[in-house]
Image 1: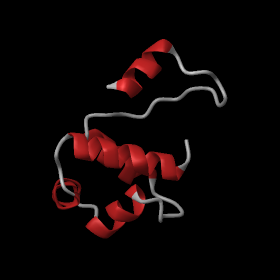
Image 2: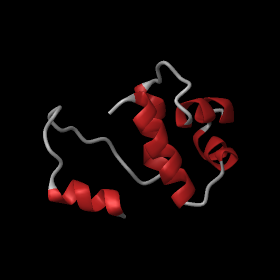
Image 3: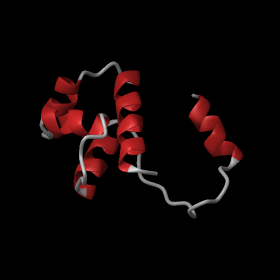
Length: 81
């Protein structure tokens, strides 16, 4: 997953909760400018703590999988939700 992919997923998750970037800023303490840069792929690097904070607020967590490994049925089903 690239940072651009991560940003797209964060944006999708935020919108699915019907939160604005202002809402996420208020809940996370991360500036709206930084959130916008993350979501739109205009950030070259982001601290792991910020990603963890955002994902936690959105009800998600990190998971690891081997690079290049095909997605599991469960992962494919999660994408469709």
